[in-house]
Structures are given as C-alpha cells and as structure tokens.
Image (cartoon, rainbow, N blue to C red; front, side, top):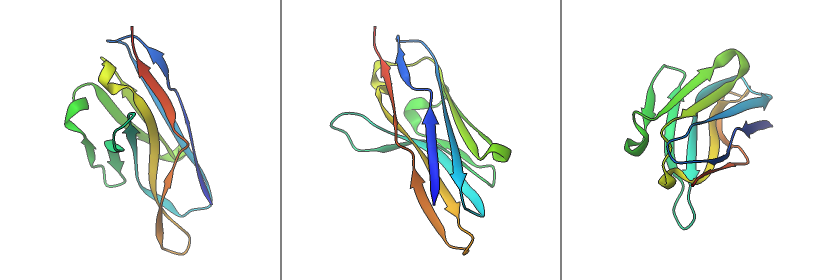
Amino acid sequence: QVQLVESGGGLVQPGGSLRLSCAASGSFFSINAMGWYRQAPGKERELVAVSTSGGSINYVDSVKGRFTISRDNAKNAVYQQMNSLKPEDTAVYYCNARVVLATGRWSVYWGQGTQVTVSS
C-alpha cells in the first residue's frame, strides 16, 4: 500500500504565497510522476501541475508563472510553491502519484487533500 501525506495549506491574502508538500511512503518500486490537482466547490477536479521522472513538467495555464512544482526523488516528495495567489486559486489541493509497484504494474494514488483559501 502507498500513502501520500500532504501539508502546507491554509488561509492567505490575495498576492500571498504558500508552499504545499507531499511525501509518499509504503511499498513500491518507483514513482513515475507526481503532481497536484485541485477541486473548488461546485467544480470538477483539475490538474494543476505535474512532474514526471523523465523531467517533464506541465502546468495548467491559469497558474503558469505563479506556481512552481519540484520533486525530491530521494525523499519521494513533491512540492508546489504558489506565489501571487488569487481568490480563484481557492480549492482543496490533492497530491497525486503514479507509482510503479514491485509487481511491475502501476497504480495511481491520492493524498487526503489540503485546503487552500485565498481571501482578504
């Protein structure tokens, strides 16, 4: 079983910054990709940023230039630095990992979610 534990959410004023962290633990062979999704009230969950083991990084257009995703492969961790936050960034943010298991099969895991609220 693989667990993803997130931290770093909270309340911040518009223009402020937050840093999200997520660490994977459990039994697995490797992590192919890690990223962040978010879900605002009444909206579908959307991909925010993803980082693959091959070095590819992608962002949703609405956060380009403001959010930065990074990984620490030694710690099986992913981070998201969020700057110039806007009220529309308010959502529950979920860590996501595509993991290769010891069997060679891959599976997708989710964190429990962390609330980010941008409000004055």
